[in-house]
Structure formats: C-alpha cells, structure tokens
Amino acid sequence: MSSGTAATMHPTSRGAAVYSGVRDAILRHALAPGTKLAEDELGGIYGVSRTIVRSALQGLAADRLVILEPNRGAFVAKPSTREAREVFEARALLEPKVAALAAEVAKPGDAARLRAHLEEEHAATRAGKDGEALVLSAKFHIGIAELAGHSIYTEFVRDLCSRSSLIIALYWKRRDTTCESHAHNALVEAIAGNRPQDAAELMTSHLVDLLSGLDLSQRPPGKTSLAEALRGA
Amino acid sequence: MSSGTAATMHPTSRGAAVYSGVRDAILRHALAPGTKLAEDELGGIYGVSRTIVRSALQGLAADRLVILEPNRGAFVAKPSTREAREVFEARALLEPKVAALAAEVAKPGDAARLRAHLEEEHAATRAGKDGEALVLSAKFHIGIAELAGHSIYTEFVRDLCSRSSLIIALYWKRRDTTCESHAHNALVEAIAGNRPQDAAELMTSHLVDLLSGLDLSQRPPGKTSLAEALRGA
DNA sequence: ACATCAATTATTGTATACGAAATATGCTTA
DNA sequence: TAAGCATATTTCGTATACAATAATTGATGT
Image (cartoon, rainbow over all chains, first blue to last red; front, side, top):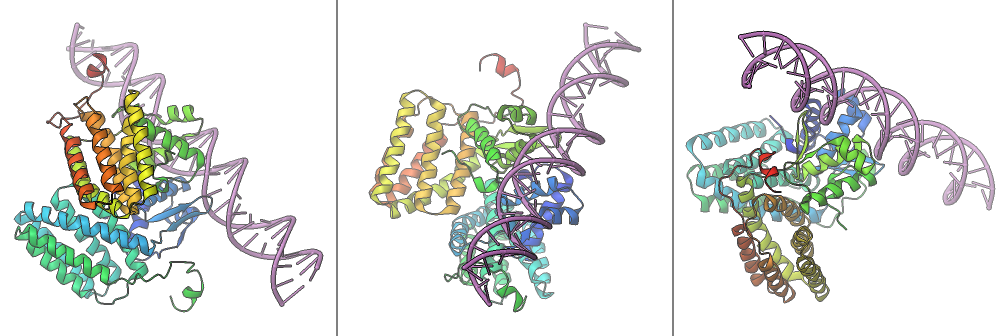
C-alpha cells in the first residue's frame, strides 16, 4: 500500500520492493539524512543484485530522497534550510488550492475515507509510534490531492511531502504533534462539507503551523558524522 | 548547455550524454510521442552498453518524458488531453507567482541575460527552425524561474515545460508562433522594470494564449501507428 | 609526535552473458 | 480464403564479472 511514484521506476517487482522499502524507511525516519546506502549492503538485505539496487536508488534520487555522488555512492538526502523554506513556500502555494479543489468535488464516500484515514493517524499518535504517525500525516495530504482528482498536483504534493519528511527529521524542534491532528480534523470537516474557501484557509494555517515548528536558524547541515552520533543516538 | 535535471540521473558522463541527447530530441520534436526507444538501438547509436541506456531511460521516465512498459520497453510519452489540461492549470498557478518573484529580484544583469536569450529565440523563429524555437521558449520560462532564485519552483517549471513540449507536439493546432515572441518581450520588460504585478498578469495571459492554441477536443491519443503515419508525416 | 605519502582495500561504473517474456511470422486447418 | 495455433525471433529483466575511482590504513621522514 506504500507504492511511491511507480512510474519513475524501471518496472520490476523486486526493484519496486527495495524502492518502497528504502523509501518507507526514510519517510518513517528509520534512516537518518546523510546515511550511506551501499549497493552491496542493500542487495544483501533484499536478496537482489546490485543492478536492481542501483535502479531503485536512481528512482529515489528522482524523488530527491537520496542524492547520488559520483564514484562515492548514494546517501539519504539532507535538505538545506534554504530548500526547507522553499519546500514549504511551494506547499503554501499548492496545497490550499488543492484542498479547495477537493472540497469542491468531495462526495460522502470520500469524506468517509478521509475520516477513516484520520482515525488511523490518531491511533498511531496515541500508540506513541511517531514515525508511523508522520507517514500517515503525509499520506493524508496526498490523499486530499488524489481526492481533488488532479494528477499533476498529486505528484507535486507527493514530492513535497516526501521532502518535508526529511526536513522534519532535520529541523523539527517541537514535541507536540497534537495540534497536527486537530488541524487535520478541521480540514476534513471543511472538505466533507464542500466548503472550498474554508478548506483552503485551514490548509494555509496548518502549513504555517508546521513551518513554525521548524528551527531553520542558519545551522548548516554540515558533517554530522561522529561527534553528534556518539553522545546519544 | 542542455543539462536536464542531472540530480535524477545516476552520475556518469556517458549516461548523461544519452540522457540529454534523447531529451533534447524529444523536446525539439525530433522524436514523436509514442516512438519506441529500443535499448540496443540507442546503445548502438551512442556507443554505450544497455546498462547506460537503461539508466538514461529511467531518468527520462522520472521526467515523464518517456514511459516504461513492463516487458515491452520504453516509449516517448503521449500525454492525454486530461493531463494536458492539468499541466497548463499547474503552470497557471505556478508561473505567474514565479514571474512576480523574478520581477522582484531582477537586477540589470539579469534583464540583459533574458533579453539576449530572447534574441536567440527570435533568430530561431526567423530562421524557420521551429523545434529550436520551441526549445528556447521553454528555456525562457525556466530561465525566469532560475532568476527568481527558487530551486523548487524551478524544478516544477522545468518539469511542466518538458511536458508542455510533448503536449504541443500532440495537440498544437495553430501555425503562428509570433504572438509567443511578443508575449515574451512584454514579460521581459515587466521583469526588467521590477513590476511584479505586471509580470504575473502577463504570464497569466501568455499561458492562456498558449492553452488556447491547443486542440484538446476528446480525440484520444490512441494507436497512431501506421494509418496516420502513411498519409503524410 | 605530526604530517606527508604510498599501498591496500573497498565500492562504484560499465560491459557482457544468460534467461524470460512478448511479439511476429509461418503453418495448419476449417 | 481466413482464422487459430505453434514456432522463431527479438527485446527486455537480471545476475555476474571486470575495470576504475575513491577511501583507508600503514609506513616513512622531518
């Protein structure tokens, strides 16, 4: 169920497995930004050849989740503070529009699906599984775009949400993810009630809230290698 | 100078060559939508192995310029009329914003660069080289995004312009590309004059003009194979 | 003891070879 | 003659092997 942008991948069942496996691991913050993704290692884990791994890594690079350094290998991407700002600026432009579109076309069945999704999200949050809740939160935003029925916007939102996951991994400062759930609740209501204007405004303020939870002071994401890793994981 | 989104590719000099080679050919309409891109054939042309070709094709698939059909091969993408509409809707949302940003930050040197680019474009148009002019037109839009200094918007605009090239190849009905040049002229003036509002409005109307030049009546891009190819190009 | 340099090791870049799937071709049969 | 089927060929999917580049380690000299 965690199929990414399958169209970007070379179509192979096993390749898709490693692609979405690594992708989900990054999105749930099981793989930290900067982590090296060695081809042989991944091949051993998934029981496939390096050929497949390279294909998957290239797909992940297209999603900007990993960067490919020539003759050095693949690493989980580390978005800069500048890129972080740009991502949220783009989201602020796109997602209110998308939410309004979704509110225009939403039918009762759609609303039910969104509510069900939201319940999953709440459950994960209550269970304390933070990474899982984050993944579901992203899926919520993507689900709204799918509901809007606009494939291009959906691609863009998916892309931006993936990057946002990395950004949150790097720059999140707050501890409370509760406000998030409330904002999502209100959004669902506006969409289910076919109130585009409200949906757009709620999405805007939700994104502002998210951005305000980040610490984007000019700490460059420089070499985090050992010093930080050793004094507590 | 025709470097695409290099970050999505596996980093290899020869791989980049076939990537941008095929990319440029598609963008200048030398390769029609639906054309089969056989791996061995491309490998022979560029003197590289199928491994490299596959990597390049995957990169092009990530750009949505080609589609990869399992066990069938790679083909130049054929955007549907629905996708065409969505692409231009997304451009209508993004590019006016981008143009305004560019107008805010434009310095004299930037304006000069844009004007020089425009002159190239005019020259290509006058020389009757249609494909070349189209490529330059896309580069103009991308150049504005780069001027705006927003890497995410730039990526999106690049993506949308690439797809637009395919869309124009499939659905263009008009013959006059002159209005295009005039619109670009006016845009440069607004950007050079640091008038964001005007730049945004000019971009909007330019995109409306472009869209109106398309014939998006429900002709599905179905099998164009032989019947159409034989009674004229 | 520190810095510089050389050899080793490990990992990526590329090509080739083999197996599998799909398409095309030619034959058989009604 | 036309439709259906079996065979042959082409092309893709994957693994493996070799070559090239970069990182690491140990040695050497100041």
